[in-house]
Amino acid sequence: MHRGKAAGLMVVAMAMTATAPQTAQAWGNDGHRTIGLIAEHYLSPAEKAEVDRLLALPIELDLPATIKDRATWADAFRDSDRNTTKVRYNLTHNWHFVDLELDKPDMKSACFGDKPLPVATDPSTADAHECVVQKIEEFRRVLANKSLPDGEHAKALTYLLHFVGDVHQPLHAAQHNNDQGGNLVYVVTGKAKNGSNLHSFWDTATVGRLGSSPDTISAALISDISASDIAMWRQGGPRDWAMESYQVARDVAYRTPSKTRSCTIRARDGSSKAETCIVLDGIYRANAAGAAQTRLEAAGVRLAWVISEALK
Image 1: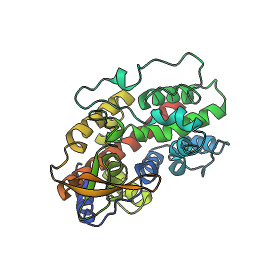
Image 2: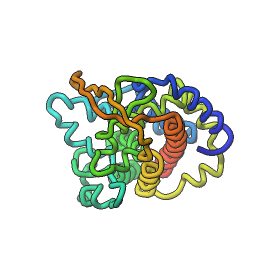
Image 3: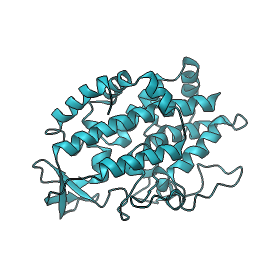
């Protein structure tokens, strides 16, 4: 969290702490849409026109051809056969994260050996054992390769719209004792009886506390971004951005309060079970919202930069 507008947003975040539900929209929805809207703001008219042209091309599991909506496509595609054949799910689910172990971050291990794809291999069809930083690097090369057909450019762009956002979510870049980025850490807020996991909290509540919709959140965040922010964030690459997210996970996300109590956790199949949950207090939740704001801002600026550089 930094200057000016950020201070005002923190006040809003703290005010909403007591009322925002655990079911706030996910980073995979409102968060990704917010990042897409920030990126769109920083594209030139010519770049925006080219992006719109590519997004208008047919694609599997079609969504509205806007940057905001297509930023959610990779999650929707991954989950489209999650409960049936699992072909899409098994191919792509590892691509959304890089689980750097909190006590000993190792990019090679977190990226399944970090092996490059063979030359001329389409990154949208292989390999299942890759991490998000590898996929950003691969799809950025595809988008920049003028010799490839538009269909491949469109698919690469669509994945980039999502994965640049993913690498900026702290718990998509860290885990502690193989807890799958906080998915096995149970948390609860306020006096609620139902809890969630820590990963879900960062995916959902942190974004929901910044505003009521992606349009509202992105407008406020854009007004907070300075020229010096843009210059700072237009540096490095996805491996550097993953390490930033890892540091936020280490210094903020995993610095949870010590208080615990019993809560109910509901599974995907509708069943529920009693668990011991960490009670996330107001200070933790406000710090999380502030950290999420900065990561969303950086992701939006960098997504626009990745697209701009690729389209040159």
